[in-house]
Amino acid sequence: MKKSFLKIATISFIAIFMTTLSFAQSHKSSHPEGTLVVKGIGTVSIAPSIAVLSIDIIAENKDYQACIESLDKKSENIKSTLKKAGFSSKSIKTSGFSINRDMKYNSQLGKSEFIGFKASHKVSIRIDNNNDEINKAFNAIAGSLTDAGFYLGFDLNEQEKEKAKNEIIKNAVSDAKQKAELIANASGVELDRIIDIRYGELNLQPVYPSYKSRANAMVMSEGAAPSLDFDINASDIKHRDEITIIWSIK
Image (cartoon, rainbow, N blue to C red; front, side, top):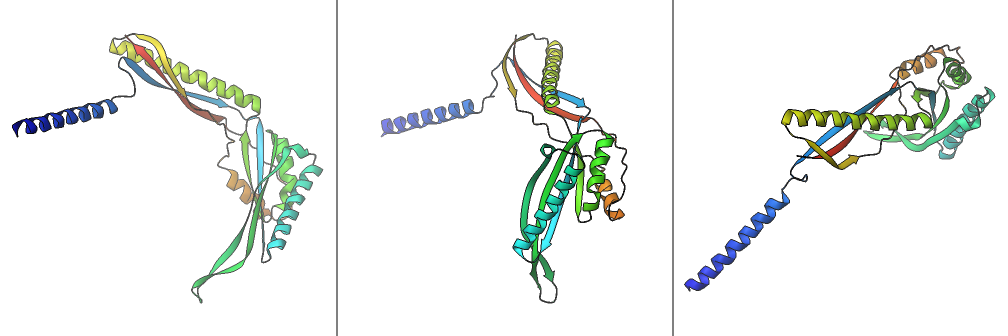
């Protein structure tokens, strides 16, 4: 009986020991001992060369097909107007079509009622970022904006985006190196070799300024075909990214 008890106790002890060891190993740091993990931050600030004018077009109708046809007519009217003003077809893009049931709450019936369909569509044009081109585009479409809104954003061309990405990476690596050297000197250790670098892909998106709503209100309040003369000085486009570098130390 004692032998059986000792045997069971021994097996239980081994099982507990192995479980504890396994738990300890699974909770060890993902970084090996004798390493320094540093996050570098890179930033860049570039004056935008591209202005992006986006026009939100809306159509409403109780009939589904009539709603779509109305939206298409408005969209084609704006695109045709821009082309007549001298803008190329390649610079004019369409996107974001949607159509939904429009509902309105009836307080007398105590429920929402179907009042028709609402369709929306976006037409955007990419132009050089200068006031002459921007005002030319604004004035071309101003008479068509009585039931549409617009947003003015700024972007970089493809070469500028690639240059910005490269500059951000260089700045992030430089920042990580400076931090690593500072930490190593303050800690009394020496940096050895880099054993890992972690970096995610940077995606540079157009920037839409805060004054877009104000500009939209100015157009909408003027009525039909106002003469617009905006003096727009766009802020630099600022981007940042991070890179993590792991050094072995000695």
